[in-house]
Image (cartoon, rainbow, N blue to C red; front, side):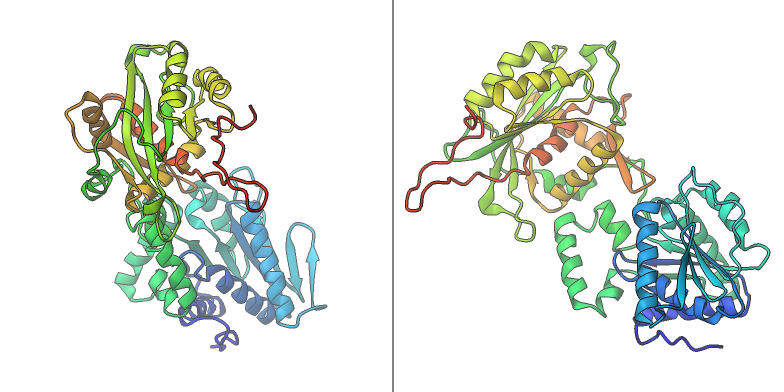
Length: 476
């Protein structure tokens, strides 16, 4: 067994994985390993150091190492640049050379970098020494088993799948479960898992960073669970559990007019805007089955989160119209938001039929106040993650019960909301149409985006102060 000369560069948990992979390669065992390391915990550094070592060991004999990633930019490109840097660090300048097709040669040994994007053509390559899959949770199973797995068949090459969990149906999770079952049978370790606390044992700065992320997102947030706790997420369940709903519940009273000196933002989900998956609804949708919902939020900068600086958002009012065309509400919306609430920022659903109303509101309130939001699968996913972070961090509170229909409908939708997790770390959240609507839910999520507001600071000559202009006044 060859000792790893890189063990003083890598942390103990990285060395443990490296030794197992190296042994399988040198003894031609052809094992398949799964390696889950908390985000920024060093899996890419481990991979690069292994590549340098194996290129060195096989530079006289020859053979290919193959590394794949879900995308060329940025994932595969980062791996290429990292390997070049490590070869330079090892004093290999002049000993390695690039070849066409993202290939790095050291002597007779070659490192191939291949994209695992669905459209990428990779059939024909051979992995004589090692096959690596970076971010394996994002690689399509069919792509891997049909085009990548056979690359190591003729040489019984060792395979390593790196990544962090996502849902229970990913390639990484499937192979992980197979490895755990094999381990139970023969005792040979094939799955390696190191969560953020293991990484933090060797890096105090990392501990401080992840602790801040835990405060910002909350331990139950899908991204924190998957990337730092290394726990898979499971869709089809409630968007919020009992504890999160309790966090969302505030003790302040609903109000129908602003309090002097306070800052207010708003969000509008328009009837006929976007469907549950973020795509525009058709024009023939029955408007009586959909509603326009305005959610008003008061920003409390004195209670801002100490980690993020984001203000607490208190939901203070709802306006709700069912079966009314959004265009006919335009004068009422402008009056409500501008004259009554002096709204500093408004995020409005501008998807599909909502584009026209959003444009009218921009003209009425000012483009510096209104931000049109177009629902897509990606943008709705980000909206959902931000909503969960705000609730988990205690930064979003609903007014206390006062017997209104708006209050009842809000909590009905919150309790019925479901979450679904998709590839590439995206999510969807909605109320199943068979159970009701999600207008209040969508408006709530848009309010979190509206709350990303920074108060304007008055500017003038030194020694002269004055009130800051309202956003709606600027440019007039």
